[in-house]
Image (cartoon, rainbow, N blue to C red; front, side, top):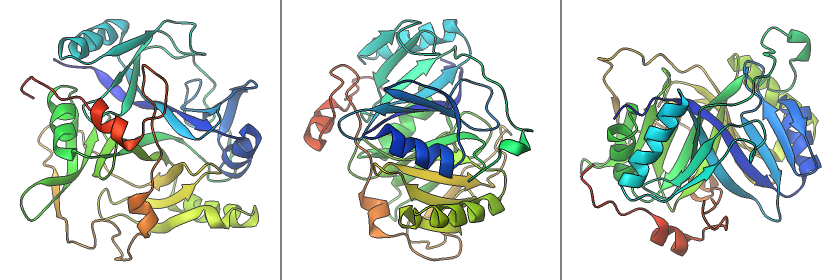
Amino acid sequence: MNANIIRCARAILHVTDLEASRHFYVDVLGFIETEADDRHIYLRGLEEHTHHSLVLKKADEPCVEVLGYKVFSSDDLKALSVMFEQKGFATKWLKKGEQHAIGDAFRVQDVNGMPLEFFAEIEPAERMLQRYDMYKGARMQRIDHFNCMVSNVEQGYDFYQNKLGFACSEYTETENGNIWAAWLHRKQTVHDLALMNGKGPRLHHIGFSLPDPLAIIHACDVLAASGYGDKIERGPGRHGLSNAFFLYLRDPDGHRIELYNGDYLTSDPDFKPIRWAINDPMRQTFWGHEAPDCWFNEASSVLDILTEEKMDQEAAKLKQHKPTFVI
């Protein structure tokens, strides 16, 4: 089927201190605060015309509630849910009004156990792209991608391509010919989703697009001047994979955010995925410097969509969908 998924569109992160999170995301990084209440802060980038792309939700401990994708229409939403249900996936519907600013949506754990949400409608908001008087911090433009740490990259790679209509832009291959990591997209850039090998399902990071590389340098200065220099985990640098400039940060609860700029167009149907060997040092960082161990080992836990409880690693293994169909 043609799933008609447009792009990655929003994420809900559980945070323990809304005011600390507001200061980090709004005052320092420069997100636009669309709206807030005593349990939520709704954030968007300067380029975005939708109500939000990131929800910070007050909770007792940090976790990832869901990763959201926008689909083309309500008919596509229904067809996508039927596909998941026919393949044996449990879905959970949230009707319009159950979530602020979002229309009908359904949630599902993907083939590796990551909690996903699909929706067609979201309330509009004023686009601030040319409100240069409001540019501050990292000058956040828009949500760009999710990076998920999973225990079976090849299973996810097959499922997202063959069932959800994603295309591959780049991938890392082991000496045995196995796919170690993959960059998959619906919009016409390098990725909406990256899958990396590790203990999962966990969220490694959310990537947000910036207007230029200087915004990344400026963000480093603002972070340091604001007392957040220790939140810079990796970079700035340039990726070999994607060719983008990057900076990885950890928010006050440890969630990882990537500031991202400068990837390339992938719209042509004859575009061939770029292969990287796993032992090529330039794939991670084009300039050759290595990532810290924490970048490979640490990631955010995710929720079970049905129980709404955090999945530990053993529960996650049991939750991962074991398809009986041919991908």
